[in-house]
Image (cartoon, rainbow, N blue to C red):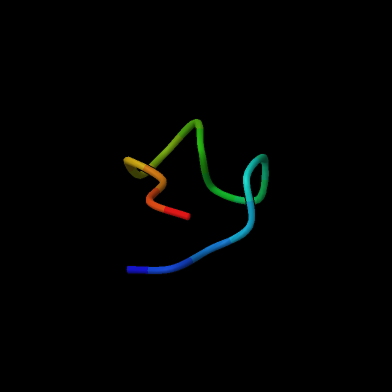
Length: 16
C-alpha cells in the first residue's frame, strides 16, 4: 500500500 506519509500514517502502517 503506497500512501503519502502523514495521510494515514496514524491509522495504517505507511509504506512509501
